[in-house]
Image (tube, rainbow, N blue to C red):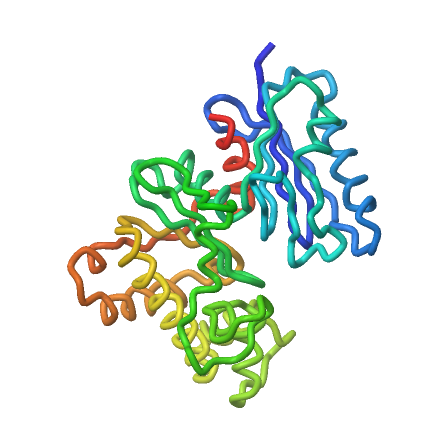
Length: 300
C-alpha cells in the first residue's frame, strides 16, 4: 500500500486536509469552514474529523500542519490572528494524540505555501525563494539555500508586516505602515472607495480588479499603489536574503498583469543593487493546494 503524508492547512476561513504522495501530488482532499465559535474545541472538532476521514484505511507516514500565525514551533502551539479562539493552542500535541505513532511537523502557512511552490509549483529549481500570498491579508515564507527557513520561533518570512510607510495607518498586528495596510485586498478596496471609486458590484478586491481591467482610473491607481508597496517590500527582503525568485499567489494575485506588471516596474525603480534587480517575480502555480503540498513537504 502506498504510504501517504497527511497534510492540514488551517486558516480563518477554512480548514483543509489532504493526502500527498511521495512525488508531491495531492491525491485526495477535503475542507470545512472554520468555526467562528469562541470555544477552541469547536475548531479542533473540525480538525479531528478531517484527520479521521483522511486517515481511514490508509497508511499515513506522517502529518504536516500548515497554520495561520503566529506559530510557536518550539512549543508546538498556534495563535492565528484570524482564529481568535485559538491562543497558544497545542496543535502539534493534539494531532499526535489523535494519530499516535506517526511524526507530526508544524509550519506557518506562508512557509508551507513557499515549500509547496518550491517542490511542485512555480518555484522549482530556485535556491533562494520568497513565496507570498496577497489576499485578505499578506503572508509569506522563505526557502533559503534550498531549505525552509523557520527562524527563531517559526515566523520568519512574515513579509506582510514589513514596514513600507513609516507614517502609515495602524495595522491589525499592532504596528504601523505594514505592506498589508496598503496591498491586501480589503485595504485596496477601502482606499479606492475613499478616493472616488464607484464599484460596479460588491466593493471588494474582485470587483476592483474587474473595474481596473475595464479601465477605471481609480481602480488602476489602487493597483499601482499596492504594487509599489509590494515591490518596496520585495526589494527590502531581497536585500537581506539575496533572493533569486519571488512567487506570488492569493486572490489579488489572480488579477494577473494588473498586479504583476506594476510590481515588476516598481521593483526596477527600487532595485539600485544588481543582485536585487536580478530577482524574478512570477505567479504561483498551485493555487489553493500549495499549503497542503507544502505541509507535506515538512516531512521530506
